[in-house]
Image 1 (cartoon, rainbow, N blue to C red):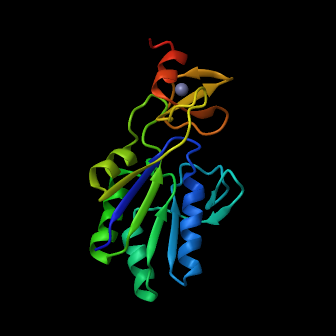
Image 2 (image 1 turned 180 degrees about the vertical axis):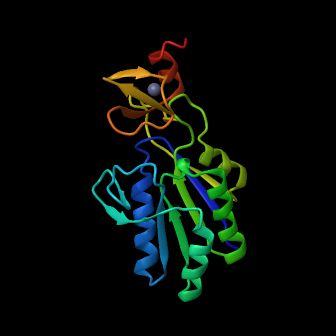
Length: 190
Ligand SMILES: [Zn+2]
């Protein structure tokens, strides 16, 4: 039985790199891996997944017709796995459609993304993935300010930590991985 996987991590936790590596491993073995991203983040350029160490991969954007799209592709030539980047930006409906791909077409789906936003609140896609996934893994990285494991994302605006503003803002500000203690301390929540 295929599974729906959710691999979450903070910023800089190597998610895009793992997607590209997974895709490479499957295709090297002659297996068909479909790569998808979400249309919210277009920084990588149109339909591109880019890792911080310079690797890149073409990807399709997830749409409402994802189940039918994959079904048609699978009938044409067997699909062995599906990888999804920026899964936090999926809608609840998208996640349900991905679970249908796993259950009805028996294709494993591996979704990579952030768990929480800079206010430490779950994204819609993350929440649905935590509720529905068969297997959940955490990708680890280190806090920007100390050596503890980072579990939260901090938004820096002009270099200063902020926890207000729109959930999805892509561009000028910077996001860094931090531990809970540094998050509270820097935002003066303690
Ligand atoms: Zn820290």
